[in-house]
Length: 589
Image (cartoon, rainbow, N blue to C red; front, side, top):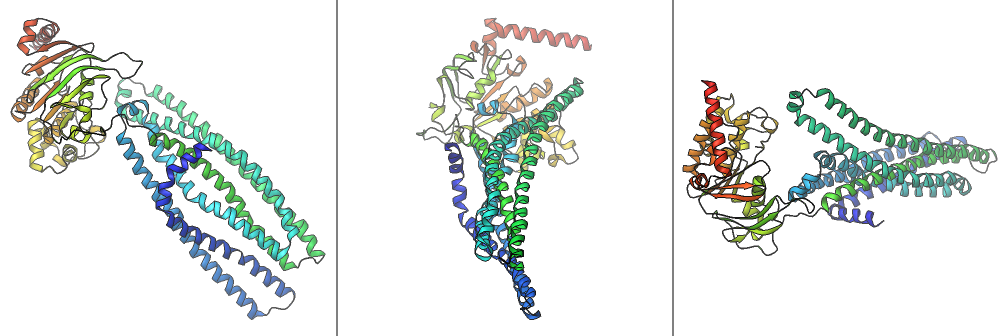
């Protein structure tokens, strides 16, 4: 019960915001339920009037006119409650979508590492669909199940017979018992269904994203087998839910059928013995027909509420997730950064039980210098960048910008003053122009073109039929690896931030293009801090300082000439790469 109350509390602000809409819709629904009771009454009056010859054609027409007016009012009311109740549930669904997305944007990288894309997508699809039904049709069903049934039973007792009404209430008790067991089973199976849907969505998303890799390794059949397994599991879970629903409905109809049987047997006997008139018997049978919908609505209401509660429980996992990276309650008064970065005895590990990725890093990057970071794969280069952009916080030690502790700098200020070119060079399924201006939405076309010239990609873009309006497909699939890297660099350059971080951003371009970009960077970034992560020595040889990491520790630090004189790991790497270039050149000759 406490968990369900917590789920309801999460919804309270949405329900409070749209309470007037719901109240209006419920009032319209009550009016419809009230008018519904007059149709059986008018039918009985016509039957008794004709049977006793006490009703002429004019009287029949008058009653028929009342029935038509009731039907028209009911039709208008049905549109009204749909607008106010069902329409409002759609508005709450939209608000929840926005709030879930807003919440996801605040969560740390660790959350996305631990939760698959398919599971997150399920929140926006099946879970919100179930919650919308719970906030829409379940309210309609609940009002009808209680109010209309109470009104109908009252009419049955006052207009026809108390004893007949008591007889048909016996099978209604069976509906209550059935509903208790159905609620428990539905909640259990719905949660399993959503988890299975998340796995299926994730399998599809991964397979489509990795389509090139699958084909390159000719693993189509193996991937198909994997998908069949996940799909079969999803099918089995959904079939269990469908079987439960298929079993619940026939049982409900059994109780409805028993009610009709009681009406025919008892009502027929009462009519024959003149305890009620034929018109009253027909009226009672019509009232029972009216009562069937609330009985069905009761089952619907239980289904919607159960699935909605299970969906809200899953959505609450996102809302209750605490963001690890947040602004300090007492931030420093800083709006811009100059570009000085200092690592002071920094240690970092990705989890309490995981080994250290960085160990006792003491490095100072001066304002306006070009600083390079090198090292073997897994040495901790990208981790240093993740700490500088505060995707993670240090385990111990501190990082400061211009003397301000990074944790005291507002996140918006920190990230606004850093232009970042990541390793994966992510591009959106949009035009080149929109991708390039992602970090500076008000950029002019001249600024965009100039940034692309600095990144040595403008010539390639001019060759495209639509130039800067070219759609580049999901993740930039229509561009080559080198083109994606250069577009990502241009996007960062256009932002023109005091600090530029390039994480292995020149690995897919040839050496001539690399030289052009680096020369442009030297002139464009004069007086601004540039941090370059690279594997090629040629990329960093003109840097002011080079940090060489080894297993998360500072192995060597100095200028190119200083590290060559040191004759350590950096010097050995330089000689190795130089020999590889010479061998490659001799083979071409």
